Image 1 (cartoon, rainbow, N blue to C red):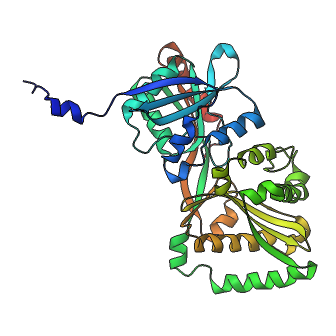
Image 2 (spheres, rainbow, N blue to C red):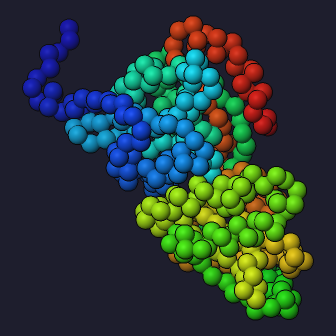
Image 3 (cartoon, rainbow, N blue to C red):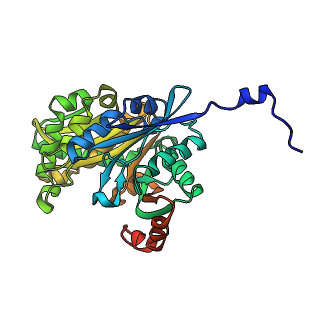
Length: 363
């Protein structure tokens, strides 16, 4: 026999969640992001606004709140033919395309979010995101529980540097420091070396232009069409410049810059999220390549990060060669997800799972 619930039992139940769908980006995004994990607090209103301005699209936002406090906020934009009603989460590819959620967001909150989402779209692309992304993982779990089709495709492996462990083992090695001093001595033959660190305000005040000048002289301009450059006008420069107008975001952005006789020669650009550093981009002018300016700079950058309290560096995907040499190891996989609402479309999506997976990068 089921025991009847007493008043005290009801009082212990969490307050019911409610959901709203907002045209445009909701101001609740910042409130949710500031209460989420430190690693995800860059997912702010201006992050998405910068993506919309740089890459296009008209956003809507689903906000789940409980007792007047927003706990999940998921912006989305339409993609593909309007008839298909497909959507994606906007943002920059670097370091991932995710959405903010409080760490204590509940399963029923995600279930409610999906109910609202099903009324607006047939399918939602989530990612690329890491396998251990808490918000994306909770939404994907809820989608499976509600009968949505869930498709994933592998994008890449990430690489992570455990700075605390490296420091405990005596990083950097004396042999590495001797090699670096040797290269610095010969690099200085080209002119006066200036090593500096730029915060978001300094980047917005001309620093981004210096990083773009290095990219325009680098291999990315010589060997590609330049669309993947991070800071040029033909690349993703508009996104980062607009993102930096948010002072909270600007405080998370930082770049290490080397100039030789005043000429920008190498940079490393990062997002610092608490004790985690996302290494977003680095490049160098090939005119100085013989003396490894990029390597010299990122060693200085990592040493400064360690001194500043960074314990882990997330290098994301890409060339694992130099990352492994410095001590990085394989981290969580990065995947693209597609969730398709229950019904005939979900059945069709499941039948096409293999096609979606083959469209990824493969292992």
